[in-house]
Image 1 (cartoon, rainbow, N blue to C red):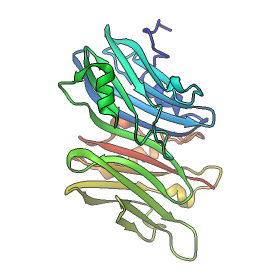
Image 2: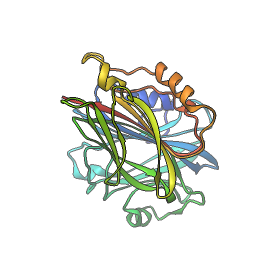
Image 3: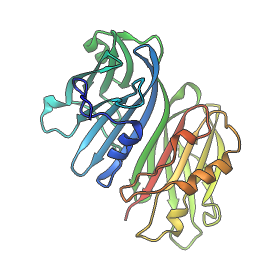
Image 4: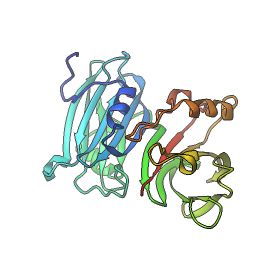
Length: 303
């Protein structure tokens, strides 16, 4: 293995990173891919928040121009030391210095391993913040003494595991101006009536799927901030899999232009993905036929 840059915990390609954090010990993870300009090139920055019984970790991977030895940083969030939740790490991307500043001392969490508020994580290169996560933006600029990047970072993909008994919640960036919206998925699988499912956006019921035995796979389009958003679902495993082989319900939220026949391509992708015992669905990200933001949600039912 090659020598890592200073401050780098390990160096993996994106698929290896996802495999390493979505393994048998992972209870929950959220992976976001951001496109940002760093060291003169537009690059993918992959941010993964993961949580298990033994740890709570933030992984940040920055693509190098080489297909190998991407620069990756690991931050332990489950440290008992209060000062450990604020820090700085440094590494190099194509020989350019990159600093990662973070402050998670007062971060608020819900059921997701990703914080909801009162934190920041900032990637800085050449006195510019190329990626800024969290709501404490003023504090981040003050601490890093840096200016905003000339090219705003864009969130292009989100993928997450969610575990719940009856109600699955997530946050996603859709609609006009890509502001954050709250999504709730509520299935009713057992009982005296036919299985149903409801999908709500910001507390308003937007989609109701009745006769779920027959409509376990489908899609609908709704308006979010007057922008069409397509929602695809496949909940076959909720209804027809045994306890030993049960898998998640798969949901895709997307806005953008579809390229080709999505239904046939999705059928092909869906037939190929495998679900590991740890809950990672290896749906090929590079085959998603869209040109804008896409959010994959894997909803796992617990006892």
